[in-house]
Length: 57
Image (cartoon, rainbow, N blue to C red; front, side, top):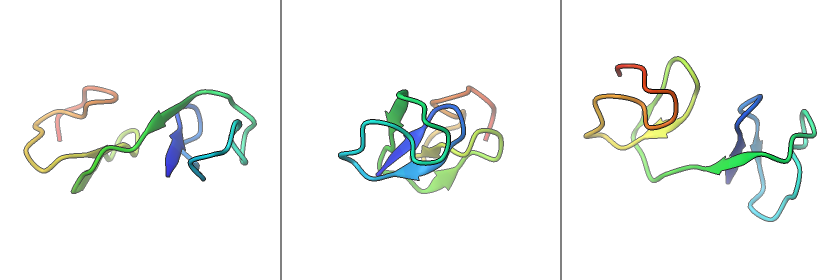
């Protein structure tokens, strides 16, 4: 799965645009255990700060 960097909607790996907002910008979800409460990005269990937005987890 890929997640849209603008609206955080999940889209299939092969999609070229976000199915929700039409954005062409994505980031690929990392293998993770903790979802950021601020931006929704998934972070590995040992992260103290979100890799996407930097907020303390």
